[in-house]
Amino acid sequence: MTTTDPSPRTSTGPRLRWWPALLGLAVAALSGADLLSGGVVAGSGPAVVLAVPVLVYLVAATSGRRRWSWPTVGLATVVVVGSALLGADPVVGILTVAGAVLVAALVTGRLAPTALPAAGAVGFGAVAASGVVLVPTAGALVVGVGLLGHAAWDVVHHRRGTVVTHSLAEFCAVLDTPARDRPAPRDGRNPGGVKSFRAIVRSSKATEVGAVWTTRPRSGS
Image 1 (cartoon, rainbow, N blue to C red):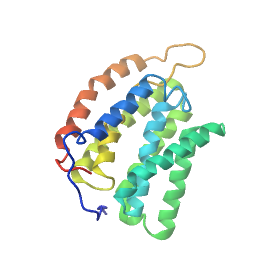
Image 2: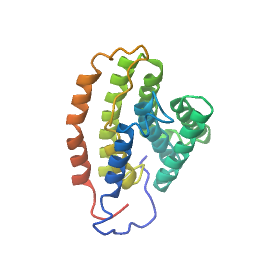
Image 3: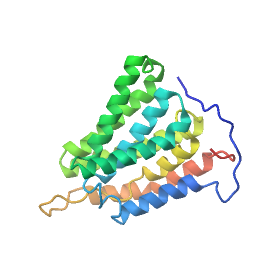
Image 4: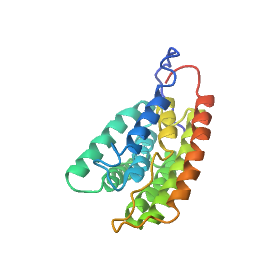
């Protein structure tokens, strides 16, 4: 089932046209400067970036309300900060809430009509969880690939105008390209293969941003 937003779309001026992509770049820059991934989400920044849209897509899909996309980002932010303050891993906190949403959708009969978004949420959620349970090298690689996969997922939904708002899909597609890699292990060793993977990820950034910007509709979201 595809979800549509019944609210009318309004046009925006050229100054506001690219705000979701610019916001995504700004958040990615903060993450790369250690202001985000080196702060309350230290040690699991990329996995958190992947876990947040899992919750957002799941809530929007099961509720059938695209307009809930950005409010769910706010909810996810509260969960991230709250988990960190309680000494829990933010990824675990977000995925716990996502699991509760999934169970609620199953109980209320909303899961079957949203099977594809739900399956995507489960898959990407498992990838985000791997960033917590796997050793740093493997976790960084798996989460990095998952972020690129979710960027493509965002582009598809941006083109189709389904599940989440265009602005949220655009924001996520830019942000999902990792701004930095998982920190090195505590014993000081450099995680093998992460450096070369960083080059692969960065080389794809222009492609991901260009794909979103060229497919973004002229009217705002």
